[in-house]
Amino acid sequence: MTSDLSRRHFLGLTTGTAAALALTSCANSMPWAAVAPRFKAKGSKLNIAVVGVGGRGYSLVHDAKGENLVALCDVDERSAKKAFEEFPNAKHYRDWRLMLEELDASIDAVVIGTPDHMHAPIAKAAMQRGMHVYVEKPLTWSIGEARELIEQLDDFFRNDPEVYVSGNLMFYYVEGNPAKCTSPDVFVVRGVPKGERRTYKLWEEGHPPQVVIELSSQSTWGDDLQRKWRLFERLGIEEYFIFDPQYNYLWEPLLAYRLVNGEYEEVAVENGRVRSEVLSLELVDTGETLRLFDPQAGEFLPTRQELKDRKEQAEAELARLREEIAKLRQSG
Image (cartoon, rainbow, N blue to C red; front, side, top):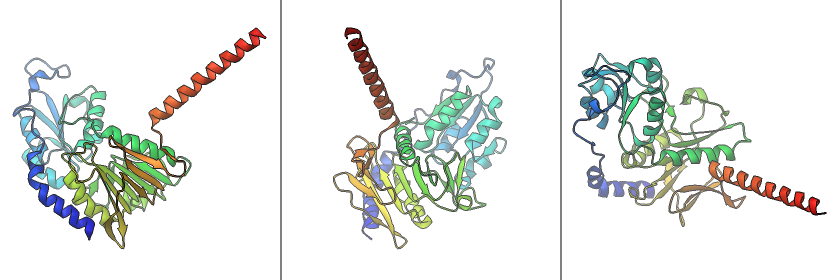
């Protein structure tokens, strides 16, 4: 299959490059003493929680082991097994939100070693509770773009009660096995009602997403092209789009795949545009970011900021017209 061969060819050529570009630590040892603790006496140890303890996160756990490790959190038990076994006295969690809620008063600082797309939400939640944060770079480069796409799609489908739009949400696909989960940057599900969800459980909802959009980064592009590609194909996700916001990691900035007879086939992206049959929208690489275009309306789906700007412009124009009418009445 052409798409699979192109992926394999690209991965074979770039494996060495990817390793060379791997994220490096800011320092061999993190300066914990420089972080102001929550009302700690001078010289006392900090209570540290680490989110994402497999891979690179394992080294962050060791950087922090001189302090009090009160909690370790990772959605993948297999990846976390080594750290969990080495530090049995720390509380072990799969859900960082539950960790922050249960140990709120016990945590001085949170160390974040998760994939890039989860850096910002975890850091924000911890800081909102008054905790100090160490987060691997980058902090927010793609989270804003994903949020804008989610908002645009949510607005586009606002009148359809049976379309659910979300992203950066834990998606569990095997009942009874919490390690079987993923967190797409953006996904759309037809046939399930709107509403707030803490997680998306396939066996409860009854439908997998029909569309997934991933924003690749230095630490995720290989996973997007391999593990997630195979997983989404197996789950029957009809359309899978991968975009490289940094224009640095993929052989093309925008890649598109559509399920045909149970297998993904690559869909041609022409002049930076590709149509989603499920969404009846076009995904467009503008050269700066990824936008959604409505062919029927002949325009891009507006961002929330663009809608706000339009409203302010309309209100300013209305005020100007009212002022003109008032002047005409006075002169008449």
